[in-house]
Length: 475
Image 1 (cartoon, one colour):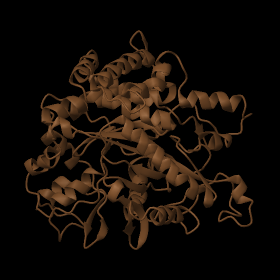
Image 2: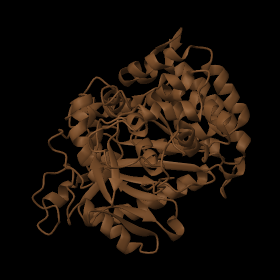
Image 3: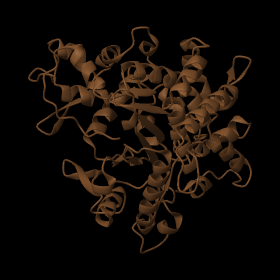
């Protein structure tokens, strides 16, 4: 459910126009789909670093491959060459920086995060069984090409060994703009760009009212997802006192565009209110004549109102500009013409499927959505906002009421299971969608998070050698 840069040149004159951008996402229930996006870190295989015929010879084992004919660029080229009927290249100033799905991959995309984190933006699919098939097929296509290049890939929330200086930069124009701007607005923005990986699921809504209910439920419960999917307990080779360091990074990245916007919980929240919030998110760029123009820090609202601002004097805002601007807001749940769940660390294939299952179960069945809403309304939204700051360190053990977040997670998972059972989708092996919740059910019953399992390995079998995580987490 990925989107390329927008191209609607209609001039923007009112907030109502902007609200209509979101309203176009309303779909009848039988058109609701599931789009799963997941990222993973690339690393140099130790045997390849020592092999005189390998493209990685001389590089340090487990370091991140650069954008080069022997690294990430080669992987993109290789996928396109092996599957020419599935992918066409996306270029940025002549360099391949992604792939757009065609034919059987229509609606999907492969893109690069700032340090080369490799991302599949999944196609809009009808069932979680199709999501599982898509994930397996993606891994099967990446593995042989990666190994031929001497590379491995691991989905982890935060890079366990690399320093910021170790990480390369991909040749995407928007990343150059963000790289310059991020240090002005937060201490950890460059870490977010270069050293984090996430998994998210994108889901549809039927009406404005349906969007509001889904966004309020999912935004309030995003800290619960952060706790369940915590998978980043290491920083530069050592335990970091966090179970989700990725989530901690987001608390000091750029709070004008990230987090849990209070407006979502206001009584008048809807498409227009969200558009108002996005208008006040500082800009990054505009695109004119195929080139990105750096207008970081400028106000879209002032631009729309005709106020003079450097870099915007000669251009009129369009709906395409606004749609691109929407993609530069990073709340924990982002509204586009669908809803993006953004609170989870990347993790194992089973956990990435569980993340999609959790939100599909909660949001795609009316009774489950209503039950989740009633649960959320038992506490003021400020409590959930406070929880967001606490769960990175303690995850499911974070205090909540008279118990812990684990207790809240058990209730949420139970509702999601009911929602998935009500959907009733069964694959050819008689597997039901609710089965994908199994890893979460185990955690709710007292099992460890992914991060806690890695810490057990670190203090046990690994004897303090964090590099062991790469082989054990490889796709």
